[in-house]
Length: 446
Ligand code: HEM
Image (cartoon, rainbow, N blue to C red; front, top):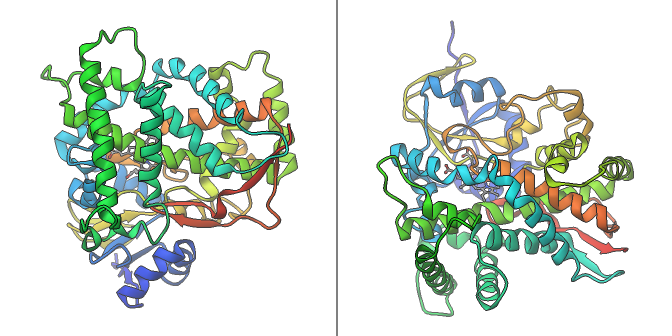
């Protein structure tokens, strides 16, 4: 069999980096058109990496029995100043697997029942701050909701001064890196210079220290309390034990709380803002969803989460503009043949969610929002995979989908919103994410 050569992008490295930072979707589409389904790029920094998106390639690479890919923690080093050196995201190998095993259970199964009611109540409380006729930005509303959920459901911190202080600090801290330009302090270590309280990095570090202090005090206090009556995720993590009987250290707990905040807050908020946009942009989608929701005799969280059309809307939202375009980087542990193309051992790979989700053969008219495609066809986890795959697959995916569905259902069942955008909303980079440009302007009708 002849071995085919994978092409490298011909444009100079710095142009690739600028294009992929400023116009990532156009960049990816052009690459796929000119170079096909596998290509090497330098758009992620100095390293050359292979972009993969064909479902067959993903299946071969991610299948754990093939043992082809490693998800090296070292490739995520840039997150260390943000999340700390004990974060799950910068671990690899056995330590990574052990931490995942410990952190995962509170995000699944019966634990979810405990959070459902709380998520609906938080949504109601936050939206009640809006007055009828008031215009608002959907992303701000959803961020307020998901931040409150992280603080109450994940950290177990309720109302009061501590809650307000932590919420303000975290919002300011995350806001420091939310534009493409300001996010460069996270992406480029050369900009990470502490030149005092007014310098961007100085400000970033000082805020992180203040947040650290509050979290550490909270962890120490909670270790002294009897946990059995508490269901928040921090309480469950304090109790959880590794196989050798040890618990997580205080530093591990703190860094992983920050990891859950960073990985879970803006991602879910962005997805909800997109969903609100699509639902209100297409009256037929809105009517069909409202009908499904109103047909529920008792809108209890578990029943809401099982609704087929609501599920399809959430899936199509995450398909059309995946909030995260790529997974974390991987590296091949051995050479592998991908549909006739030979990939050497030690190759850096960046699986691309966006390009899979835009394939015409899987999703006819891929730029159209059509939730029905998820009703009419069952997609495999290599065809629809907004949460990544393999050993680093999103740890919060069940929780994120549960949150999305409950928040959308609570809003739609209790309020009427109106889209206030005159032209179609397009995606724009927001730090590491792709979010609706301008955040989606809406108003509260009632
Ligand atoms: C719509 C919302 C979300 C999206 C689209 C999303 C997407 C992703 C993606 C693409 C990855 C990388 C997977 C890979 O490399 O294969 C990831 C990792 C991760 N996500 Fe999410 N995520 C969302 C919400 C959440 C939530 C709510 C949490 C927790 C509260 C969370 C926690 C994590 C963590 C901890 C990782 C790293 C896992 C590891 O290193 O083993 N995510 N997510």
